Image 1 (cartoon, protein in one colour):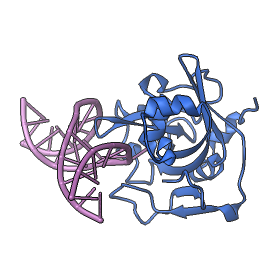
Image 2 (spheres, protein in one colour):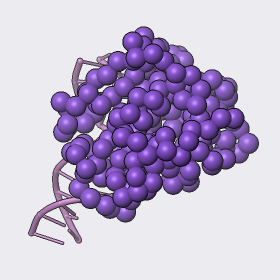
Image 3 (cartoon, chains in turn cyan, red, blue):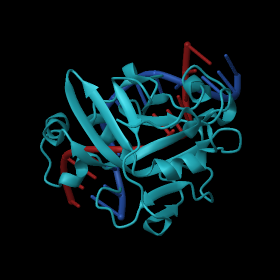
Image 4 (tube, protein in one colour):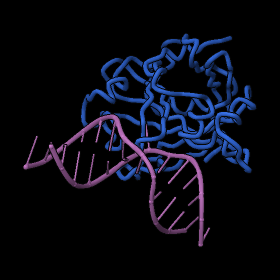
Length: 192
DNA sequence: GCAATGATGCACT
DNA sequence: GTGCATCATTGCG
């Protein structure tokens, strides 16, 4: 399977965010493979962005955001949901891209089992916490190298033209609402 | 030590 | 559309 170059993840966060649309996210947990195409992301740029976890400097929780681009940042939100991010930019810059939604490709039955019965199939992977549940993403994946880890990986797959992409303010934040740092695929049924 | 808050999802109306 | 579960992390005292 093709890989992104090391430099891919070291570029400005918003460029990486835009180009992660269409990339394939794959996890392998207990021998069960699940994968899907990324269709919705948000950029978080610590040095300039009050909504980013890293904005107020390093803490034990956000330390992974300061790693060299290409690693995996997983955190617990609201005490019960996990969210997964792709770390971007050079070492010591606290920046990452939150993956908010994917279009399921492989292991759809496994995802259904992990998520439980739902009437609307879109609820499988629409939303950052839902997709983590469907892909069995948890704290064991914190710090994984997304180019090479057998557990969780992001690889090139599809790419959409700019006309197919839309931007908007990010979801669920109180600061930085003026920034259009959410990127998603227009008219895609898996976008949240 | 303690209180506020949050990059959410679910059940229910 | 609205309300709430539920707790680690954070910042302040």
